[in-house]
Amino acid sequence: MFEVKGGGRANRVSKINRIPAIYGVMELMESRRLATATVSSWSSTSLSDATSGATYFAGVAVGDNGYPNGLPTAVAGAGGQQTLGLSTAWDGDEDDGFDSTLVGMQFSVNTSGTGGSSFEVADSGSSSLAFGGSAIHQVTIQADVAGSDMEMSFEDITVSFYRGGTLIETVSAGNLDANTMGATSWNPAESGLTVTAGADSSYDGVEISAQVRLQAAQGMYPGPSDIFGQIAIT
Image (tube, rainbow, N blue to C red):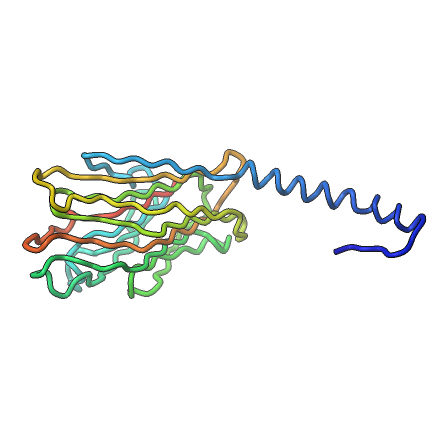
């Protein structure tokens, strides 16, 4: 903290010198206020594709439950093109019900400001992606299940926005849950939220982290896309 001890003219000069610094703090606070992101949410009994038209996207699904040569359980890409597929073994014994348990997920795009990106689910390790650098305005996260006795959830969702490699704003967006456990009809369920950056934010990087869980009741053997979660960045 800047401080000048003594009396008379020295004190008057110190106060004058402080004025620009105080205004600078006020301007910074005003800039942060204008950049504040907003969160909206919805639920539906029909499924939608959040990744259509997205600049960057990532997602998790039942896939082939980690079978090395099967369908991936997690994907990421840009501009409609999948560039990464991961094979996470969600559940080693589906006879007592399908349950991935809560596992960590992190999707980072250009947080360093140099264009590097990465995607990580459970114990898959961080996989690098060769994209990033476009302006970022919005993040959409969706949980979807295709029928009864299934559940897709995101917990402790955090969205962090970056500009030029510097963290500017972090949003705690809560939880998402598409849940048809115990339902008597074969209706799908979708639960989603959108985090929209402030109009003057000028963000070029983002990181989304959460815990994800895919579940189905005992006797249900979900298909590759019966339980899935999506992240879309535009």
